[in-house]
Length: 132
Image 1 (cartoon, helix red, strand yellow):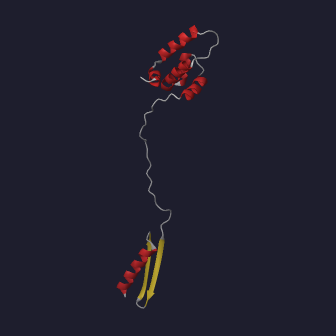
Image 2: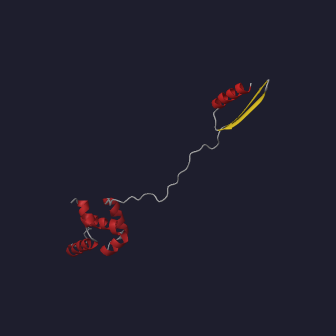
């Protein structure tokens, strides 16, 4: 088992016992060993900073900083989004055309939205040829 997995598998009671042993055996004002900080950070990732700091009699702010420094990562379960908004992509304004044709036999007026000028030109030519 890797070192980080062993740390993640520790219970708060096991880490509490390690801190108790260290506190009883230390000589003077010796800083907490990195291994104990890593174990505390792993437990805090799983059980929460406040609970862990209180149980191990540690400064919660210092424990948070140590957690960032040791970067103990617990894989997070990703949840599917609860809400997904789907929007239709439509242009702000549709092109609008009016074509008027006038000849010997009459007038032809075509008003259209969302058509290209080329499409209207072909349509008007076909209709004009039919009418005349």
